[in-house]
Amino acid sequence: MKSTLIQNGSRYLSGVTLLLWALVVHAVDLPRLADESPWTPSEHAGATLPSQEFTSRWVYQLLLGEIAAQRDNFGVAVKNYLDLARTTHDPRVARRATEVALYAHDQKAAQEAIALWLVAEPKSMEAREALAALLLSQGKLLDVEEVLAQLLASDKTDVGNDFRNLSVIFTEHPDHEAVLRLAERLAEPYPQVPEARYLVGSSAFLAGKNDQALEEARAASLLRPGWEASALLEGRVLQEQSSERALAFYQNFLERYPQSRDIRLLFARYLVELRDYQKAREQFNVLLTEAPNNPDLTLAVALLTMQLKDYTGAELLYQKALAQGYRDPDVIRFYLGQVYEEQKRWDKAIQWYGTVAAGDQLTMAQIRVALMWARQNQLKKALDLLHAVPAQTQEQQEQKVLAEEQMQRESGDYQGAFDTLTVALHVSPNSPDLLYERAIVADKLNHLDTLEQDLRKVIALRPQYAHAYNALGYSLADRDLRLNEALGLIQEALTLAPNDPFIMDSLGWVQFRMGHIPESIATLKRAYALQDDPEIAAHLGEVLWVSGDHPAAQQTWENSLKANPDNEVLTSAVRRFMH
Image 1: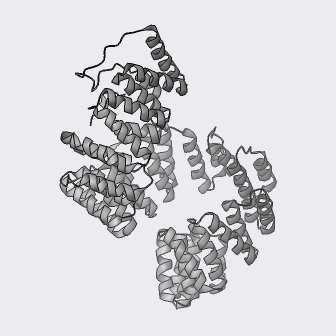
Image 2 (image 1 turned 90 degrees about the vertical axis):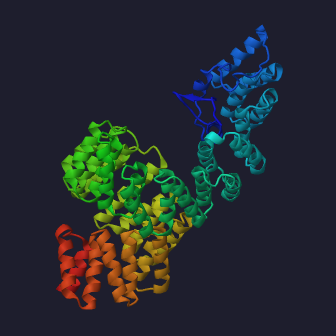
Image 3 (image 1 turned 180 degrees about the horizontal axis):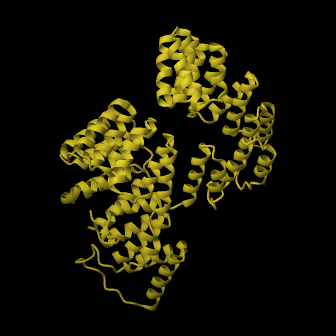
């Protein structure tokens, strides 16, 4: 199943894959296609081709089609090549007509061109591949099955590569159940081909059949030990089933195959998802050792280093990524501003934010500067700066509103913050971010009706937004209201974000309110281990105190106060119980 439809350097890609790119991913570069003459030798070599008389009309149409394609006038290009294919009966012209029609996303013309191609060259494998790809893109799975089965059977020396190409194509099809059934039937004659098992496994995963996907991934790995494709599939399935099993799998695989870069990268990303930043940094460091001049890996390690509050180390790594020529230097400059802002080194932070010249970070950099002036008790200067920041999109305008209400909230003006958000919501009544933030301010003002109304609207607008469920559940629990409902909301949030320490904190707090003290302590300790946040420390200390473990409570508070002496929730808890 080899193709010469498109040449990329010295590597030829499968016609099926390329055509699906043209139809679905739009990755075909037509000017490069046009550089290849329709007379380029390919599978036509050795075939009996019609003798062509180079009439002036024929040459005119050929040149017109090529020039139109080069200038993106695909209607003219398709029409001319189809006319030539009809009159010349030449498979080379029909092949070119197919290429141009597919690139133009003209499926009707592509189908006619392929039909002309097959009439001119009935045994053409490329034409059959093109037909299979076209039918598959149209959802005609029953029509495509016979064509694909013939293609696989005719190319047994490279059938594994053909199955691998199909696995790429099948992911693009929306009917995952039908694709799985097709994959099973196509793979049935090839039980010892690992790529065939992988095709079924990846199709099962997309169809939500995780047990079948896991079975097929493991079968493929047995047939080809150490194969990263099947290992990646197994890892993704296990991530959905059990974090413990997924972690054990990644660790065991990397012990046996330490050079498996893709598996290590997936493992590192999964550790980030689990908020195990220390172990994630260790894995990224291994990758960075193997590719020390890769700015993307350097940036990944820098971000994790910053999460671990190693600001000196993070700064060095950001500078290194900048020196390595990271593709968007303004991103690095923005992060360097954050490094100094986190350390309250305002002058250096403002200096770095000021070097951000363009891109998505420019507006946020200017907003961060305004917020820093507000934190230095220069609210008028901060607001003047903020109001001068240009907002070219609705999102940027919302960022400005959120920054203004944050300034008001942090200065203690909760009513002002509430009013700012209310005015903005008159313009954007369905903004989840504005609604969520107003709910948080309403909580401070004890406007429970507004809080609940806004958070329920956020949940309706963004059902997968875990923190909206969490905020509503925590607000009810903190007021000792409707505790069973609060517990259900927080559990739903934890289902959506199972390793979020702040949601764990809410769960521990509602458990405390319900009188489940041992469970509450265990939950809060897990949350605090993931994130040494002062509010989590306040809650854990309070539950430990109420349980009678005063020394542990005092130690928890004192440790957190060293880093967060001004946190309102923490200092309030200490005052209530220790004074």
